[in-house]
Image 1: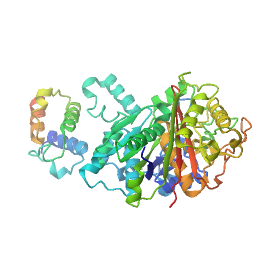
Image 2 (image 1 turned 180 degrees about the vertical axis):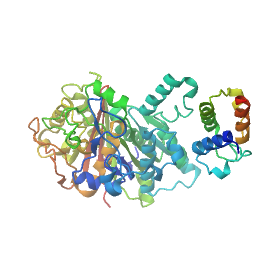
Image 3 (image 1 turned 90 degrees about the horizontal axis):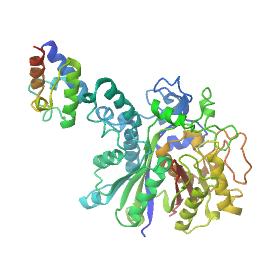
Image 4 (image 1 turned 120 degrees about the vertical axis):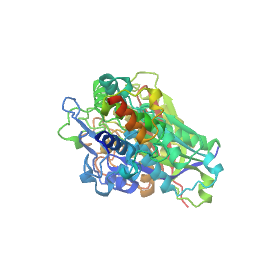
Length: 78
Length: 428
C-alpha cells in the first residue's frame, strides 16, 4: 500500500474501531466495516482534514469503499 | 390509580458506580470531592468538583477501589467518543437498574409497555463548548455529524431504549436541578395512569467543563473558599458554607406496576406513594424567601400519599450548601412538620457527592430507598457549626441508625421549580 493508502487505512481503523486486517481496498464502509451514514460523514471530514482536500457532498456519496476513498484523494492530490 | 414500585436501581456518582459500593462509602462518611483534573481550572474561582472516579485511578479512582467507574463496561469505546459523558453515565446507570430488576422483556407487547424517562439540567454542555470552538476555529464543515445526537438531553432516553428494546413512552424532563425527581414522578404517573407497565426513570448530568464551572461561578452559585480542601467544600447548613460543589453522574430506577412486580416475584425496594411539584414564581436563581414553593411541593406529595408529616421518618434535603437556599428549605420543613419536626432526621447527601444538578433528584431518591432498606440515614458531612438552631436532627457527620419506613426527597431548581417524592417501604 502507498503511504497515502496507509494514512487512509489508519483513519478508518481509528474512527470505526475495526481490525486493521479488514480495512482493504475493496471493503465497503457500510457492508463490511459496520459504518452508518453519519460515520461516513465523519470519515469524510477526517480525510479532508488529514489530506487538506475538499470532498463535496455529491462526491462523498460515491465513496463507498476504502478503495474509493484512496482513489478520490489520490486524484485530488495529483 | 395503579400502584408503582421500584424494582431496580443503578448509580454512577462521585463516590463511584454500583449501588452497594456507593452506599457503603456514603454511610461511612466519605467524600467524592477533589481538584478538577479534567481541564486546567487555574483561572477559575472554583477549582474543585465531585467527579466520577475512574477505574484508571484518575478523578479519585485511586481511593474508590471497587467502586471506580469503567465506562467500557457499559458503552463501546467507539460510541463513547460520539456521545457526551452525561449520556454514557445515563446508559450505565439505566443498564444497572435494568439488570438489578431482573426484568425480562420477552414479548413485543411487553416492550411496547416499557418506557424511559430521563431528566437532565443541561445535557451535553461540554460537547457544545467543544463544537463551538471547532466552528469558530475550523468552520462549519468540521462540526461533527454526532454533535447534535451526542448532546441532546433526550438522547439518554433514546440510547437506553435502543439498547434495551423499550418501545413505550420515551420522554425527557428539563427542570434544572429538579429534573431527576420530576423524571421519576412523571414516569410513575405514566404507569399509574396505565400508559406503561414499566419505566426506567432517572437523571444524568456531566457539566464539569470550563463553560459549566465559569457559568455557575458567574451567577455566584459555586463554592470558592475551599479550593485547597475540596472535601470540606460541601457543608450544608454549616455557617461557613459558601456555595455548591459541582457533581456529576446518573441515577436510574426501574419503576414497575405493583401487581406485575409482585406476580413475577421481583425484589421491591419501595413504593412511590407521593409526588408534588410547584413553581416559586419569584426569582430565576433565589428560592422564594418564605420557602413557600418547597412547602407546597412537599405538602402536595404528602396529600397524594395520604400521609401526615409525622409519618415521615427521613427527609433527603435539597440542601445544596448555598448561603441562602439551605435555611429557606429548613424553615419550610420546620413549618410544614410543626411538632413532628422535633427529632425528624433530615440530611443532605450533597455534602458527600456534591450537587449532581439534573441527576441529583434521582440519585437522592435512590439514597432514600437504600436508607429504608438498611434502616440508616446517611450523614450531612462538614456540619461543624449549624448556622441556625433547629429541632430537626441534621445527621451531622455521622449516619443515623433508625427504622425508616417512609422517606421524602426534595429537589429544587433554577427558575423556581420544585419537586418532592415520597417513598414507602413494602414488606412481605
